Length: 447
Ligand code: FHN
Image (cartoon, rainbow, N blue to C red; front, top):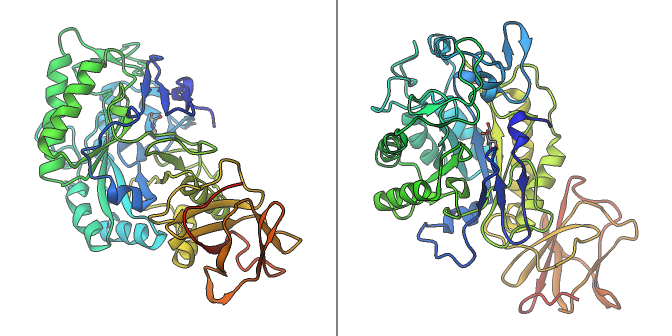
């Protein structure tokens, strides 16, 4: 995937997550050992969430003046160099008459997702909630006049999904920020910088909106982004972090608020091979774009997506998988089909994922992945052994072994030179990933 915005490089050191924004600034994840005041318990147990990129950009859907505009639907204002007036006019065409909050929350539940992070305001500055801070919002500026973020929290609660919000610090619409290359006909917005003397005013604008999102829309998490705009500095990050904590100390904040603030690291479109030391979450698209793009049919298979989820969990991380609804409010069918396949796998194997802890093994396993809970080692076998024998590199004797899908039939085991042996059926019961459960005494002691 090639994106201009990926001029910024996402580099993830083993010691933590470092994100190099366009400005080349480095934003470290929460410093090791930082005391979390946020209530991370639900988040760490959840393991799997739905990311939703939805806004005015769904109207052009990756096409401008008849041309395919690559590198992201939600970036079309920047990548097609659309002047403000022309872009703002899209609001008059945004009328998602097919939007159904209960349907979206139900899809998330059936997918096995436990939280939802939706764009309240992306880089384009359009607000998908009825904010009093600007009329450039979904209720005041569109013929729809409805507030999706007012409908989703109750829909999510009814489905057992935790409601969370994405919020971009960079804002291509705000008068407090100046585009990288202003032009009446061919502007480039990214990366913006603060207009002279307007930084404090913009911070106040954000605080007003974040207060609304916490107190009126009851978000449980802020997924910040766009922190690479020029002029966003440590004091700004600290002020925003402190402000949010003053409203509700349990709110979770991601690392992209910047400068080591935030509660978890946010690798994007990639999974750190052995996970990261502290709390982390990989976010990923199902095709190649976050916002809806009508011509992007590069869909990942459900098998690959299930393996990505397992890989994240085995590294002690979460998997935030994105959907890009259309301008009519429909989650594209190819995305729904893949999510239903993930949910079907999780209904059988979710015990290995939800609330699990990272693998005890420092090296990758030849047959797949591992996760664990006290007294249990889960082996997510993605490469079924032709020898019908799994070799588990640990000293612990196995108390009992069984297929998670069929716990009543024990599997035979033995001790070998290279670890514990588990004898499995000739054919993999689940060709995508079969979970073998090993009951062990005490903590796993890898060889
Ligand atoms: O520029 C954004 C992009 O549009 C998208 O929102 C992703 C999602 O993580 N974040 C930024 C690129 O890193």
